[in-house]
Image: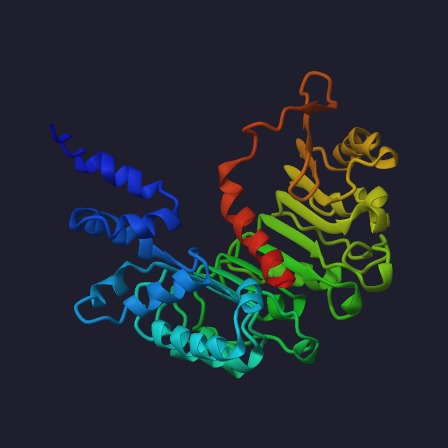
Length: 381
């Protein structure tokens, strides 16, 4: 006796939660499953691996299959892993395919272009879409600037400038571009150009010790923050790995300042360093914390966070920071992809006590978490 068909609602839920690699095979088993699975399968091209992504992108141009182009909401390309598995001739063909696909994907909400050689930045010129989020390591220059100039819908922008040849360049667009920008991750010279008069609320400063005197001081940040048309409440300072084991000291301009002006709107301060063993500024962070009188949360991330010489002082530091900033009610210390320790203010005693980290992270930071992590992905690629 044949089994009765599953309800369509149940099949849709199965498809939505299926592994993308399994979903590809599932879409060929029946016409009904193809109709249900294709919108999910094509919504995020680029998550299927190199060859499956090529196959999916080619299928966008097949006769009577152009409707699939409307399914694609997110295109995520990271060549840093694929290039190691692929011969140069195939890659050149893939760049042309990316350009062709960008020319027809008009419904993109999110676009990631990571790991493309600077000489292949031309593919971006083919994109006529108005994505809400854009992540790239394409260096500043005419291609990137002219494309961003046309963007009116974008809310999140992640620019990972990792090429020394373009180090001093920045992105500069007219006041008409990016009118809805809410979050940006970039170097200071680009932040200074793109924050003014835009509704930016979340900022990640991409900081490198090789460029420590290049305008990454507190004074510059204060002036830039004040130029946003909305209060900036989330501020990340993400340090790149330092060459020659340079020490991150409290004398760096981003920490040391005689400027009495305060970052009054910042409620979440997020500091990421490659390793705490090279972060001498940790013991003096209260000087930075007191610059943000309305802080609610401070988070510090780095390898070797819980070494014996530092781990025992975390609660003491939390208490010290609270003394310098009475509004501070939570501190979070974590290792990348590892352990986390969290302290919260006990109203009765006034002390910062260790608390469970399970389910404690506020969902309002999920967007910030995702895109600040994508900055690190792009920089490491």
